[in-house]
Amino acid sequence: MFDLTGKSALVTGASGGIGAAIAEALYAAGAKVALSGTRVEPLEALAARLGERAFVLPCNLSDVAAVEALPKQAVEAMGAVDILVNNAGITKDNLFMRMSDEEWQSVIDVNLTSTFRLCRGVVRGMMKARWGRIVNISSVVGATGNPGQGNYAASKAGMVGMSKSLASEVGRMGEAAEIAAAVLYLASPEAGYVTGATLHVNGGMSMI
Image (tube, rainbow, N blue to C red; front, side):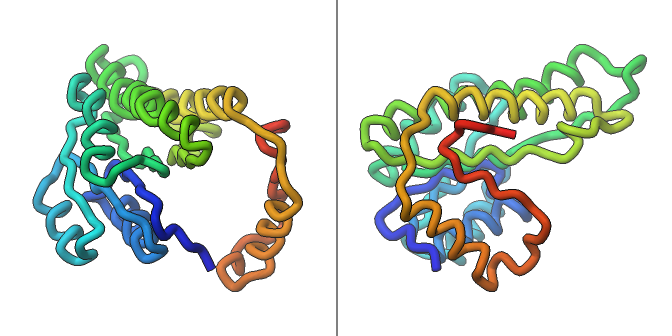
């Protein structure tokens, strides 16, 4: 159903379960995939399982220089970054009255600030190519909050607002075929668990 042949994707947090599944799905659709994370062994195992279109690019998202370099490394490895999936995240849970500055700042730095830096690092190339996709993986607690996770919830809520702001800066007019594609998805077996939902296909005119 989905064809990403010729596209190149960078996935952070690819050493974990969700990140690995995302990387596998993109690879299966034909994309080159750069696998990033802090744990090299699982990344290498995943790359070996996937095949020659997979590239291992370890990165510690708390290291500013490493984050700034990652998009460039991905371009060197794959030729471009057409798709960025910001999936990596950390938690350092504690009650508000006990949370240290380090517990707060480290979660904000990794979950939110590194996402900003990676988006900034790829968006110019996407605009030049007139094609690109950025997928930022947030969390339900960004909308609901969660006891003991003030730092994590703040980082994920911030990610949502940041994503909408970036989207509004690079929106464009839509085409009839894009509405048809959304209908095709909703009619497909892949959308079997999507029910009672409103799918907004409006190029960012209304980001609810």
